[in-house]
Length: 253
Image (cartoon, rainbow, N blue to C red; front, side, top):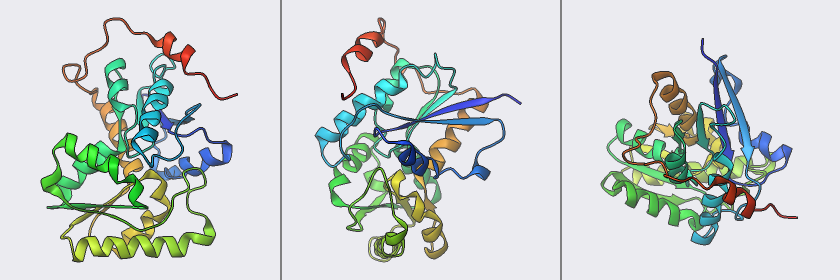
């Protein structure tokens, strides 16, 4: 059985504990024996994606972190954020599959129900949902985007002390999407929400999509089927300038 190596790009420069929390969205039973997952935090970034400025910085540094993926021997790249930061540039530069959770989960939702809603933590993230859904022309399939009013922590995620309160806030928001907005599928609006997935899955009357897991599974499937993104849609640069990017995007001192 062919060994598959997948690079997961974390869009923030986290410490070891922060990386473990992000990596915990993939439980051991979800990872096939022939698959190796390497979690790679960027060396610099924005603070939390709460503005267009911030998400632009996330694009830059996720792009940089993924540039060497093929040379490092990876078979696919996954972006650990629903913003899909750096995905388009990496698809142009790389030949191996580059998978973004946002792209995957929105289209998957369309196959599972008539309309989907995005349940997220706070309204400051709405701008990147609007951007992605507009670019993908998926507005006819969107029932709503709602925020639970919970300020996120992108490095420490949901603490044990706040789990019950936070999970219930997500549940209440999701039920509003279903009962008031007409959603038949719920998409979690961030990979940082993965701790609430099992809780919501058991309590909601419709499918719940956990974006990071599906990005991972799609990446494996593409590698196994010998497929990748289209170079007609994402043409390779005639003269890559990777070293210029590496030399100018210096880490913080």
